[in-house]
Length: 82
Image (cartoon, rainbow, N blue to C red; front, side, top):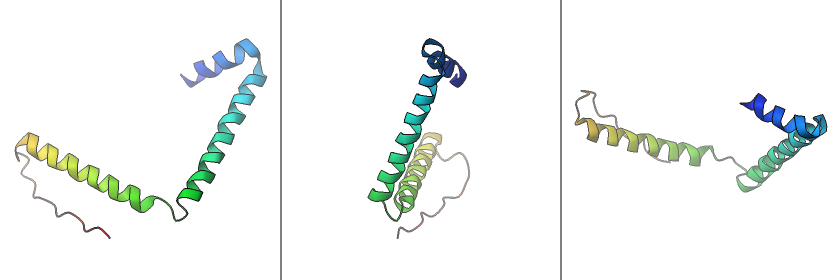
């Protein structure tokens, strides 16, 4: 699919439009990295990690509720937040 999109970009205007698009994407990525560093100087790993843990626990509760506890697995304790 990526090849088809790049081919579609290159054919009507030539190879220069493809280079321009790639430069635009690279500049956009660099701006995103700088903005992320300014907003989260220590990183977002703790926030994302807690949110991901909550999502996994919610999915586990939902699957236990839907399956009616038929898996026979012991209930895992929830980790403490810091």
